[in-house]
Length: 263
Image (cartoon, rainbow, N blue to C red):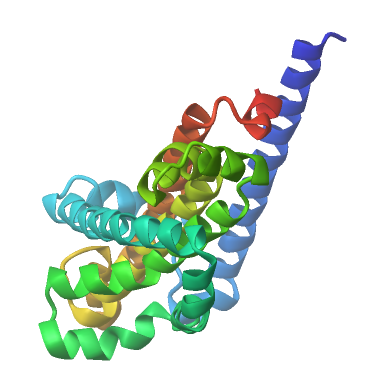
């Protein structure tokens, strides 16, 4: 068997296992819905699919998705704009890294939802509140990964920068940033997941427009069919976002050994 044929066989086998796992999960869900879950009005997969198709024909459904994506992506963008420069600067200076280590370690352990009462009190149930919440939670992976990235730069590259008497700004731009890209893309995928989770949490608990608010409304009126549809919609958005970022990572890091091995 040639190498392309072997690779294709492995891909088909992996795909078959994934499909089998999905079918098994749907089967367990159906059995639970018609058994123990009936008392709690848990909908079957078929009922959820029918409700989802009906909701997909309404403007409210797509508006909620659009609002959630807007909040999550804007928050993610803010976390990148704030976290990456701070992380690169933090990692480029040992004194700065040691001085800020406690602050970073303390801040990254605070759950984003924990500051929801504070931002809700300051800004109310607005998109600004949701953006601050998302940025607070997503900025730490970007900052930490950027810091680690600079600290992992090979000493030879550091010596090149010193030999050419590059300024800190030039060293970050021409030496540290290219070497940091594998770390930054990993941090971006982590931050994107956090952004989506916190955006929906802000909508659910803070009343901002989006999937979370519609999910809360469905819970309030005891509509389990819509609750499941919005929950699965959030899950599919997370999967789609991760796949998009993974494809972008492979394209950006085509030169990296890890991506060449995949290809």
